[in-house]
Image 1 (tube, rainbow, N blue to C red):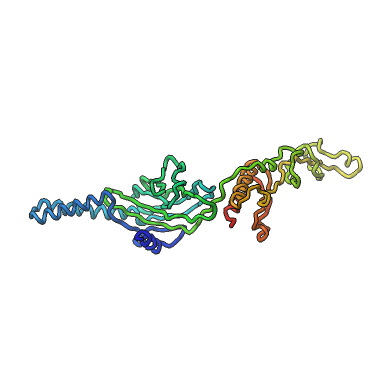
Image 2: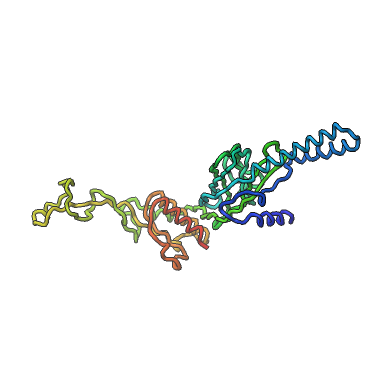
Length: 342
């Protein structure tokens, strides 16, 4: 209950935005775990100095208080004034990590030291059991931390956010903290980003997909046709006016003999077969499994460079989304459409 109230209070003081500047309003500071022992030491020296009237013990107490005050100021200064901007959020399949690219900037002349960046998120036990980045392993709360030993001007960092289901993913709050220089105090701040991530279904392999990979013309499925061509030697494509410098072997001498002028013959080879990935044709019985099979087909056809089209159940309301394309970039666009399917 207390943690929920604190989370709401922190969120009110830091509105959602893709860029934020840390200042007095959203930077907090308190004793670290090690600093709690230091606070106990302050109490013991003060009580002992007062009870026994020992000026040396009281002098030690005031010295430790001065160290604490200096540490308080320096730790707060290393976090306050930082500027954080969200640059990019990748898409990922369900169960994998979405990577968030951030730009961290400091306008201070003095370097900021020992800064840590991590996304705080609650993850399931299944997600915790998966393998993660070996260089930045997650802790028991599901955080993956990136450390910056020193920051002078600006730096680009990438942080993972774990996923477990398809759809829109609201980015968890970003925690920025530092315990420099003595580790007595911990200064931290939370950044809430407005942008969301999209998670597409985990690809599900199926045998029916083999009908979409035609190696030659005889294996082409019904309804598929060559739609893209490149300059070649096999199929006649068109006649164009002769341009000086072109090979004489390509001139149509029959047209020259008939007095129709010099024309150049152009040939083309087919390079792609248009395929249709239709939601209704997927062999799975459940909605999410059908989407997962469409994701598998899109990735395969994207790697092969085969032109294809993806038809989803909600495409009747947005027919402009059903277009032909090819390559991995078009496949990623199709995966984004799958992530947005209700």
